[in-house]
Image (cartoon, rainbow, N blue to C red; front, side):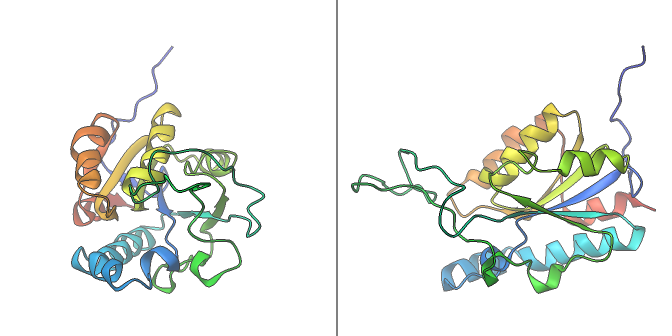
Length: 214
């Protein structure tokens, strides 16, 4: 029996999908000036736009896994953790990690620069991993897509969780280094240099676009 291969270097629109992970207003247009500067210094939104435009040019489908958490907290679980999401202490009584944003809010809408086009697919999710109890895998499979390009944030949270899942589902993986982000110390660099290269390819946006084919 022939083995499955993911050795094709080019990224054809027929076999490749662009994963725009949590490309939402709340993350890409934060109210916090420090976070605004962080994203601007790294050119994150323009890089995401350039990647999406490259996909559009060759007819590649974009998928938008996006947090759609219930405002009343009914779809989340309170748990004890050593830190909060920003690695701060959680030693206050009853301190728990909660979703940043909730469905039906402006923060949970796709950033206007990255608006889905006809044929693109929104993927509501309730956990970090884009594949967990969503129809993402089904939607990729029925389109014959066996390779994903992933971008967005955070690198060490949803991006990492989704990449691990994609690897176990035997997808070819390309991670857009300069279109992913994490503000937590050197976590972004750690995953891009020490973790993701063992599961797929870590590339810059311009190099990814250069490999896209109709």
